[in-house]
Image (cartoon, rainbow, N blue to C red; front, side):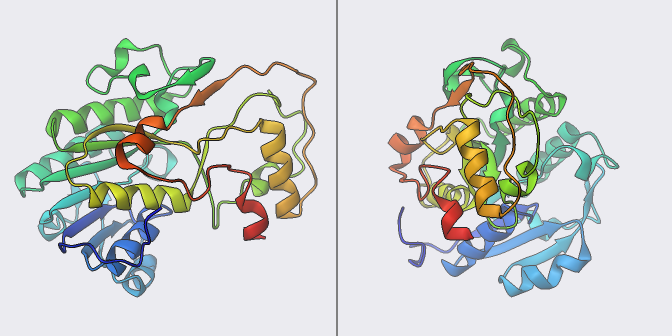
Length: 291
């Protein structure tokens, strides 16, 4: 991956909607490269943390319009939306309505480019290699249904983004997220009867998510849909045993199941188009380094 200490040749104004686990470290790196970064958070208690990263912060909810209104947040060259669906927004407007309002705000203020962090959860349950073509964001519901209902909302959001920005949108379908403060050992240690132990995992480290977004910013002509998943797919058994050891918890136990079926989400398009080199191509590798 390219050295993140280098400055971008042109300073951009970048807005990050959702300065959480992905948005905050992304903003920090972009500030270090000389960009002007603004970001939203739902909690005023996080404003000091954003300020320390050099991010100009706005506290707002999405109902579905940004509340309170902050038109300056949308006066930017690039808008990065990391807003997740699910419980964090359950007391607000439906997720697709939030994304539709964000796109309307972006268009009204002349934002030139949108980067939306989606999820590999949009893919239906299947076996074998899965590429971006499995779900077309323009017609997402022609594909078989995804496993979780929240993924239907994310499919809707993708369609809204590419409709609003047909030639200037980037959809990043992120695999299972892990890294600082999100150690998989925390969730798996001591678990019993873990299903599908021989099935593959589709994970991506936080550092690679940030690196990919940075690369997208650098390569301004890039648009389209990209899977962001570590190229190696160890078994669930291997990954979770390594995670539990590194975390220091009790090892999990697994179901008596030798079935190795499962999807392997492929990131070849990302690597070929961007020339991106994963910092952690094997998702097991970081554990010892983060102990």
